[in-house]
Length: 299
Image (cartoon, rainbow, N blue to C red):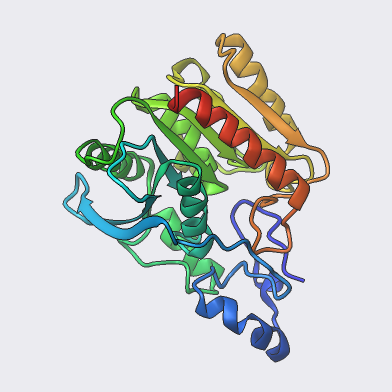
C-alpha cells in the first residue's frame, strides 16, 4: 500500500512497488496520474468533460517563460466566476485536471498553472529526490509572479466574470493559497488543503528561510477569508502548528478565516488516487469548499 503521509512526498522506501503492482497501475499511469504517489488500489473520481470546454493554454510569466495552464469551464459565453487551482508537488497531473473539471461542473472556470515546468514536469517521475529538486526551484517570487500572470490572463478572457477570484490548493499548493490571499487583493476567498503553516520543529535555518513567508506570519496581511482543511493524523503538519495559525488569525481579527481539522485523516486525505484518501472527509471538505466559493464568488 502506498500512502503519502508527508507534505514533501514519498521516501524511497514508500515507493517499493512489485511488478504485479506496476501492472495493476498501468491503466492509471497511462491516464496521467502522478507516478510517485499513485496507489495500486486507487479508484479515482473521474469527471466527464462532456458539456465543458477544456484546454491547455500558455501565457507569458513576468520572467518571459511561456507558462502552461489547464483550463476547464462550462460551455458557453459565460461569464463564469474563476477559481485558480494550485497543484501538489506532482504538478498538473490528472487529479488536478479532474479538480478543475469538478469545479467547472459547479459553474466555475478553473485554471491550474504548471508552476514547475520551467525545470521539468514532475508528474511522470518516481524519483522523489528529483521531484523535490524541481519543487525547490519554484521559489516564492516566481510562484507569485506566475499567479500574477494567471490573474492578468484570466482578466482578459470574455468568459471570466469581473471581480473577485477564488483559489484552492493541495499540499504544496495549500501553503500557496495562504500566501496568495495575503498578496493579491483580487482574491475573494481561498481554500487551503493541508498546506504547511509553519516550519517543522527540526527545520534548519536554511529550510526556514527557504519556506518564507510562512502562513503563520501572514495572518495580518490576509486580504480574503481562507478556509483551511487539515488532517489530525498528518505526520508532516503537527497540530501545534495548526493551533499557532488559529491563534494568529484570532490576533489579526481574521474572523472570516477558519481551520477545520478532520481528526482521523492523514495528509492527502482528498487525493483519491492515493491510499491516503478518506472519502467521508474528502466529501465534507469539498462541500465546505463549494459553500465558501459560492458565498464569495457567486453573489
